[in-house]
Length: 188
Image (cartoon, rainbow, N blue to C red; front, side, top):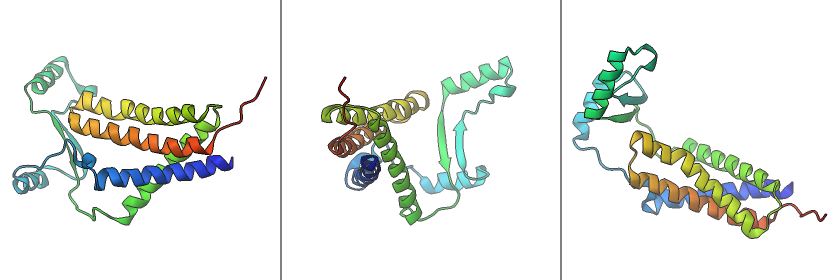
């Protein structure tokens, strides 16, 4: 159990440090993003048009109250475009606020503990443990980032960067967890 606690903490720390490196020192944090042209005019229009914080989707589809005609009209609007999402917060804030780092660290710790607990239930050797934890990164990318790319059109570069960040991060966490060892194999 000591290895689970230690492994969870160390894996969380590794994930947090790797995330900082990936976003602050490498280009991964900005891949697939670009500057909004005419941002002053666009943000002024958004301030006038939007009621508050939220993720705004267009064209909008209200599945519950859609008649066949409304569905066909939405489908045509979607085909013709434009199609998109706007993540909007009318109030700014400190982009490097302490609470953001604390929340990120806590989520990395939680993820590290989950990996350590799952690994505890295996009797894999070093390489098996490393591949098991690395596969967690691949799994998380396949089930989160790729669907956003597929269904919502997130940029391919951004999706690739997320994959690199997740897989490399979990590989590094896996090195720590694999080195701590796993359950002793029971001989039959």
